[in-house]
Image: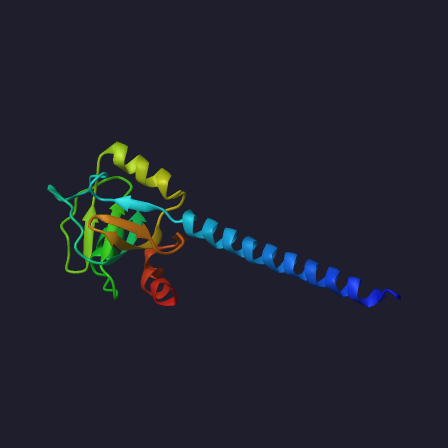
Length: 162
């Protein structure tokens, strides 16, 4: 009986193709799982932020978080007068107190919360922005990468591009 050489080669290539297909699916799953885990959570029950002297309790489903320095001239007024499609949570590096406006909530906190926030979200530059959305109750998940702005005048232009 004569052996067919083509059959064993065909089954080997089919086996290798199946193996590489499964490996590519597993690699893409691992990559997207890693990218999803890269985004952080913020629980406003655990991290205490204040608006003026009142405890901040989030109400909206989504926010734009702006981490900025009030020592940069005019930034607080610029944030107060910025009107975007989402409410803004403005967190000052120097924790200065400012009255809220219709579209912007100015937050401040203690040093421990400020440092935990900066470390958790790996914020290295000011001003920086990112989006958060409600996961449940007071737990919010980061919904975008953290973007560095050259200045806050770019905020409305930058948010419209995201």
